[in-house]
Length: 125
Image 1: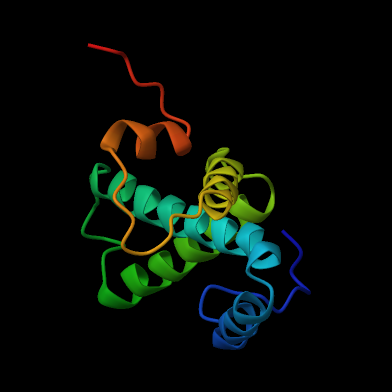
Image 2: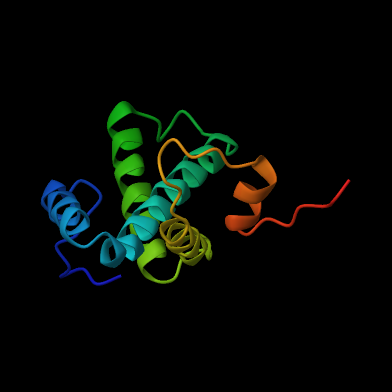
């Protein structure tokens, strides 16, 4: 992770920039959104993993827990920027597939057709 990079977990400026980018060109913002979702998922995973480790009373304090949470958030962000666990590319492909399927409002479509349009394989009965 590049320590000179200003992007951090609590960087609200980058989130505002991402939102503006998504409003103007949604297809270009998909990779950033997918990466941020992956970092959120990794942060939750790290948080749950920390719960399984027994702690001693020697190093346990509220300040230590706060710093550990901040550390986990930065680690999750760094992991997602470095390639992550492969969740971001999957989410991005799903978002692109969803953009290609356009259903007109008030159009009645059977469930089988809607699922097939979204890439699911439907077995005939």
